Amino acid sequence: MDCSGLIIVAAKIANLAPPGFSEKDWAGYSRRPSGELLRKNLSKFARRVNGGILAAEVEDILLMNVEDVNPNHLAVVTEKRKSSMSIIHSFVEEKGVIEHRLNSKWMNYVSHRGVYRLEALDNVR
Image (cartoon, rainbow, N blue to C red; front, side, top):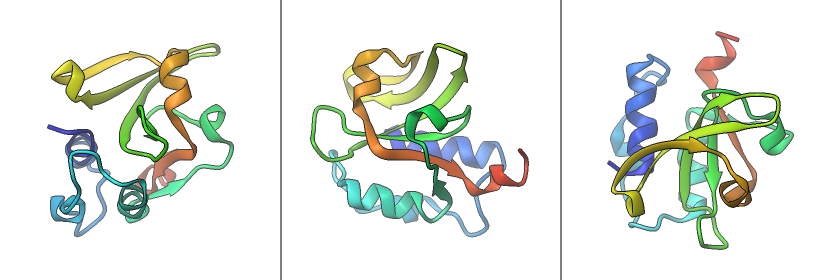
């Protein structure tokens, strides 16, 4: 499962996927997807959060530039404390889904304007 597949499965299991949401919406990108395509797909069911990483909350999606200048990866915030944050994502180098603290290395990967919130969460919070 890749990073977008994790987002799709989690949204469906939590009943946060919008009506008509489909895996087909995420088809057509390569192993290193373009940031433009990831943003386009995210905008179908999530809205960009102003304030960047400091405004991120649990369950928000992070658009990341992992070892690239363009966004190419997604993660979900799983915990937020006063001075730390944790994420879960599928990462090929780790051969699966991993959860860890958002340390300085991973914090630097978060794309400028790269925090998204599922629209369905706006009705819950």
